[in-house]
Amino acid sequence: MNIYLDNNVFHIQEAGGVSVYWYELASRLSRQKGLALTYINAHARSSNIFERRLDYTSVSRKTESFLPERLLRYLPLQCKLPGVSLFHSGYMRTSRQKDVLNMLTVHDLIHEKGLASAWPLSLFNTRLKKNSISRAEGIICISESTKKDLLHFYPDTHPDKIKVILHGISDAFSPTPHPSPYLSSHITLLLPGLRPPFVLYVGGRKKYKQFPLAVQAVQALDPSFQLVLVGGGPLSTEERLSLERWLPQRHLHAGTVSDNTLNHLYQQAWCLIYPSQAEGFGFPPGEAMKAGCPVVTTAHASIPEVVGDAAILVSDLRPASFAQAINCLKDPDKRKVLVQKGLIRSQSLSWDRCYRETLDFYRYCYERKFATP
Image 1: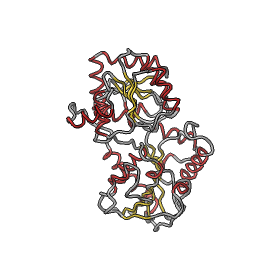
Image 2: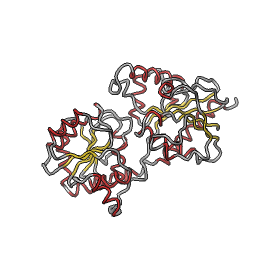
Image 3: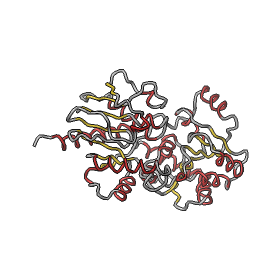
Image 4: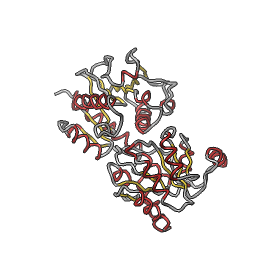
């Protein structure tokens, strides 16, 4: 197969779940024997932390167009590919060529639900997605929840061209109990006020992530509890004021940290709180389970698919309900069982498994389109 991967997602974000997925897929494809692989719109010196990890020395690269990439992200592929090729974009784009197989990964439908960017960007995103879904001959959904949403918003999509392939969780996360002295001193410098017990919040803080709920849930706990925030970009003025109001002297914002640092924080945390109500997959619960950290999260969207019975699932989206769930972890037996279940559950969430299923789906769709009658 001649495979063309559009690395445009690395230009759209400097980090994030879609970048993780694309890096894990692209890096494995580059090592697969028998494939002719080309990266489109690749930047060896990208500001994206995951693209910088890719080895570009052994893979062909192609520049799509001289148009700015901030415009290309909303357009179909602008360059011509050789016939009988496979094109897979990191962000919702397809080729208009009839002799090219279009593969598409749909991560979520938050734009369609009105939970992401405002108009007119939301309109551009939904129009692009609609056109790409209609052109694609193989669609990967990252959860059954995403597939259900896709068929709800785009009911003309034939279910036979959709395959659910769950993401993996990086091997950087593990329950190793004793970090190196260097890592311990690094974390002390990064978060000098860090002290147990603390509840960990990881990732973005957009409206559907329910960040205020996490803040108020920790406020309802014993005053000895801290809330530690990782990732999600700088705090807004509104977020700072909320933290100062509800958790004065009881919150720390670590910003972006390395996987090693995050793994250590998972290991030391009382639990991860993840109150999001609209996820295509949800990496933090999987990472926490793999690191041996108890997870308190919602029973909504894709989260139950990720955690199974290895987390405390809260259906009632109120701070008091989350605080009650967090306090349940004071029972050492319940905590131990939850951690063990999480370690077992996370073993099924591997990137190698995700890659194998994706490559098998490539081959299936390729043979279906190009096989000689």
